[in-house]
View 1: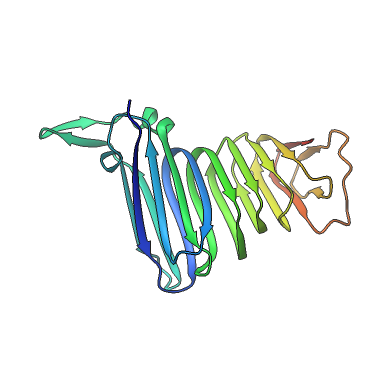
View 2: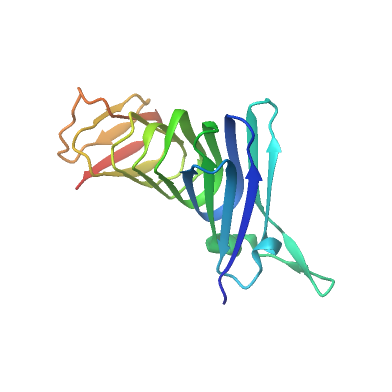
Length: 224
């Protein structure tokens, strides 16, 4: 199976909010760039060309200050004028997406979809980043500001503790938070939720906070 990659760029003309919507992929990595474009790189390790497997488009949202990035998996493609069906469940395990966003033209970021791995790195926003959907593994590193994770999936969260506010909103989920910072205030505001600290020394005076919210969820803190 040969690796194939598709790259697409869209111009951004003014500062606005950006929504990224997708259905089922393996990994999404989101980073900032000095370029005044939205750059989308899609890699697939199946023998189906990316342009046949994935469709990407950027549209204006309902508000004037909103751009919407839609990344969708096709249900079929044509080969020699014959329709070839795509096993989307199988395909999602082999689709990897990287999105580069213009640092000077991005205000607020919302990410919506279902995936295995979400990576947020080298990110700073005036407002905040929000993810909604299903995810198994989240990695947030070298980023500042406010990140909100809304998922009802059991997930492993890897976090270096540099953001001012990290919100974890879950409904009847059991998750792990792996941290490398011993200077965090991790607190519970959920209903019937529980935090297992594992001898972690919570710092209530820290400026960097992690909040668990939701209903009947459990978060285990793992510090190393």
